[in-house]
Amino acid sequence: MDPNLLPPEILDAERGFPQALEACTDLDALMRVKGLYTGRDDSHAVRMMELLKVAPKEQKRALGAAINGLKNLWEEGLKARQGELETARRQANSLATSWDPDLPPPLPTRGALHPLNRLMDRLIDIFRPLGYHVEEGPEAESEANNFDGLNIPEDHPARGSADTFYFSAHKGRLLRTHTSPVQVRVLQRVAPDIERLGGIRFLAPGRVYRKDEIDPTHSPMFHQVEGMLVGHDIGMQHLKGTLAYAMKALFGPGADVRFRPSYFPFVEPGCEVDVRCPLCGGSGCRVCKGSGWVEILGAGLIHPNVLTFAGLDPKIWSGFAFGMGVERTAMMVSQTPDLRLFFENDQRFLMTMGGLD
Ligand SMILES: [Zn+2]
Image 1: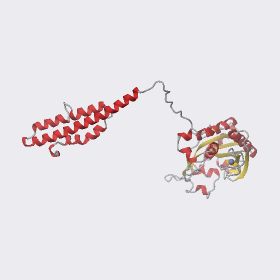
Image 2 (image 1 turned 90 degrees about the vertical axis):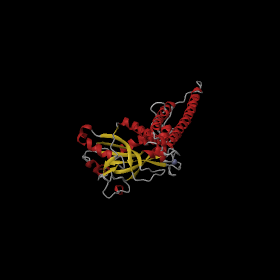
Image 3 (image 1 turned 135 degrees about the vertical axis):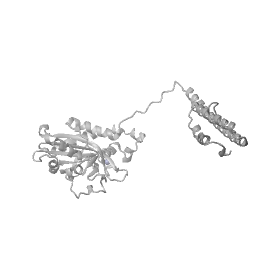
Image 4 (image 1 turned 90 degrees about the horizontal axis):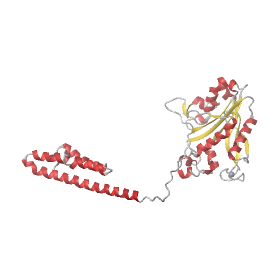
């Protein structure tokens, strides 16, 4: 076929023909394409025949051959596509008629809360009867709330860009590295009214971010639950009583708890809280690394500088704070060896998290 014999609109139609066929998903659509290309009224084929009528005599022969070639091509394409669509329709019909009313219906999979959310909800339920409510804060925080307000010194390594995600376009802004800035926000908010309130107690669950490589025990994003209580004459005895109660509620009434001195800039004194390994009962296993104990919480009495920064007089007010890594605890409760499983959304894993129900 000599393409010079045919006008551009016909050549365009010819180029678009394979896609037009491909786009037909049922026979009705195919009939519309058929009408457009080879139909009796106002189709590309009809227009080509009109061209042939008015063509100069010496061109008629070549033009006629070109038109016939094109028409045959279109008719064959339409016929083949029609066959495909008819086969597909027959198969769909035979599936529909092979339906057996005696078979049990397919049951939809029921959705459920993520294991990490279930654990956080359980902690909230444990603390709610003690008068704690839930507070939240933004994940994009200021350096002041994330570090300054928590008595973390200027030269502390956690402030470095090797550990913390900073926003390059916003000086002094970062992704919070712990849920503790919620302490700063809440204390500042309630400070003017704290006399009337008589103190405050709350939990702050949420996501936090650190520049860690992803491996079986690290992720650049993970969850914490923070807790804080402020009142009058609060001491270590209140902290120990509260956390021992909470750990027994979480791990069972037989749970053994121990407190070890530790250091965090925002508490004084600070401690770490261990629970006797719920997997081996203390005899030593892989999870507790043979020690018989697993670290669950960091805690301590609120540092006077933290109270002062928020506008509270540390001579009048005192309190305690604690923080827990949610993934860490969930891994232990459910005996999950790899933190990444929590974020991969494999339903087989999510549905067998029996330890967290
Ligand atoms: Zn163990």
